[in-house]
Length: 314
Figure 1 (cartoon, rainbow, N blue to C red):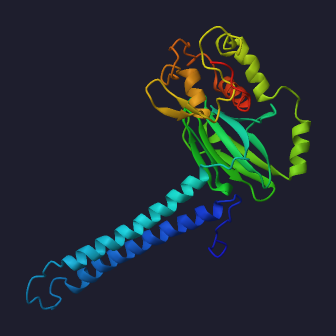
Figure 2 (tube, helix red, strand yellow):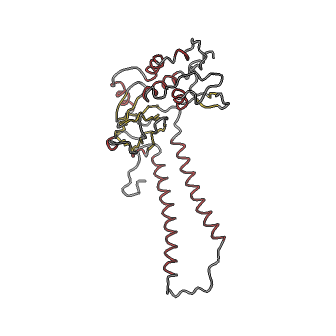
Figure 3 (cartoon, helix red, strand yellow):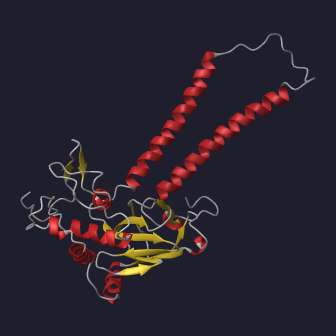
């Protein structure tokens, strides 16, 4: 899109696709606008009062014109819809090898948590050329994660996980905004995406304050909340075992089957009686309002770490 004046090229893997879609939508809208108002202007000028144009008989309705006009415009906008939908699916379907980083939005900051336990506020360090998957949650109200240079924008809604991914194309520092009014200091809820070369990113990870990984912190929280009393392999309580659950289908008591993804794990912790696993009683306590989004992300990270473990006896 460098041929467009005052247009800044994007810096993510799908920024050109987003720009092209935007130009396509704008072009289609302008053409429709010009055609519609052009015809209106022609008829207004040609058939104005005292124009001298002869009107020998009233105009007759033409179904051919009606069908042609309706079909042409419908086809154009169906094509635009299919174009946008395909891009949407690609943006929100990350590759399997993407680096997962958790982001918690709260008034008025962005808190990023890396798999190794490194944490940062109002900044996000990522390697260039690597697919980055963001799992986002809000601690309070609706926020919107917006990086103009990456053509990246997604609302972060409280009570659920939001996920999207990107690949930065070049090193540099890019502005991060909240694009949803979230309170008094909304305009100050800004940050930066720092894109580093792979070696520099590894150096940055090593230079951060050491600590447990998110999965290890989640394991400790799992025990402190008493979850291991029911879900541990040696427990006498008839509760689902968590080893090997993540990423696999889970049969529910109502006969449906759902994938055990991040969203399912989250809902099972906060509202366990909304989706009861087949063959089990709804005896798990509700943790909604008892744990924070940070703690919830740690628990999910721990359960995900058990994905390759062998399932215990049920």
